[in-house]
Image (cartoon, rainbow, N blue to C red):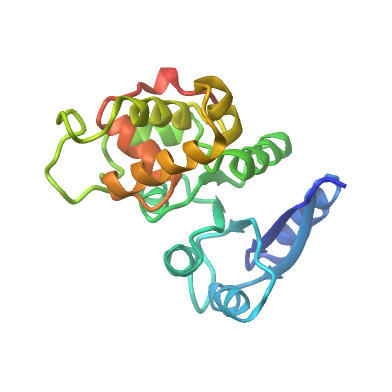
Length: 226
């Protein structure tokens, strides 16, 4: 049987949370493993549980510990967990802040069920999924560059041609096996290039790589596969 995508819902609006839970549980490949109403409870669960989610649907405004601070902690302690912001806030500053700290996607609560389901599947398969609004904010430079050094990616010894090819395909949201097939290399080699890219660009995750590539004009927003 196909592995199910393990999901945690973090939202203090109980009625909304239960509605999302009911909606997502109808999908054969989704499994809601936990629901929380505040960030503190969420972080405690992750620290104490042996079962971790693939994806957390994260509201921003929650008591005790808000979604932004919870995301920051989770990205530091559990970087393999993907976080999708699901919130009422759609201002540039909120979106930029969540992408800066590592959110894999950003959804506003008036989004359609189909878009939400697609986003969860895309994030699970490819690590990141940004809509046009998020990509525009990244392109405008509102999201900060994750790199701290002065080296340009155009320096001769910075990124190899193969690393640039892999980066471009990551930005086009191909997964490891798809990249391997396209470049006629092994999935293990793809993972090696991905790790090198993360180190060289000082990115924490795929989201950081996408931001880096866009802001260094390696890829245009129009070239991204959505």
